[in-house]
Length: 117
Length: 111
Image (tube, rainbow over all chains, first blue to last red; front, side, top):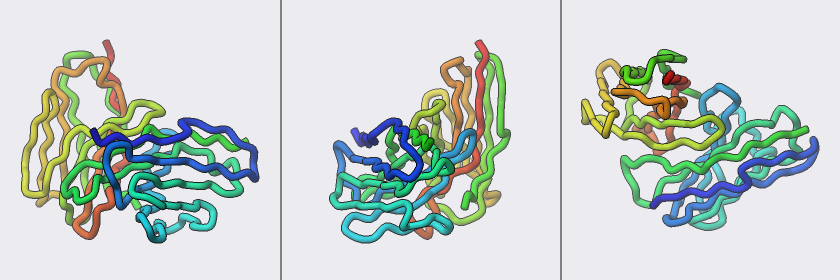
């Protein structure tokens, strides 16, 4: 159980275009989902916390107008990279806790490799 | 910001040997978790240890937690080539449910 599906697994886009990444919890509900970014050979950096039915909370230094997050239901959060540039090329990973979990592990999607040309 | 520091950054051992990775953190935590990541993939949860626990086992994995020193260790016994991956510690702070990840250890197990 506790499967998180992330789509697409990889995407190549041209500079200036926008890319949407979906994160779905398949067999549980999540009021909160987290979006991480990971550069090669580096750790995961938390970008934002996605809250169902309300605005996302962004980490310091993350542009909310560039990385649009929507969490419209208890099983779906989306991250849209707007006007992507080559420096946005990275591995983006979402994760979620089941509702009412405490002291429980995060469940991760398999990540999306974004390449901006 | 990342609060976890892991050492070593890279570890290369022979199959059958034990691998030990260490993690230090800075704030008060609810729990500390260890994850594994194969190259280009998502993270797989390995083990969670609560702040009031000192040691936990799961198969070939042994995790210790010393809250007075704000440190944890992950021991993989009788390593296998398939254990080759990056290992990350992550702390859930008492201030909220977000996880903060350490820098990771790249483990290579040579057959």
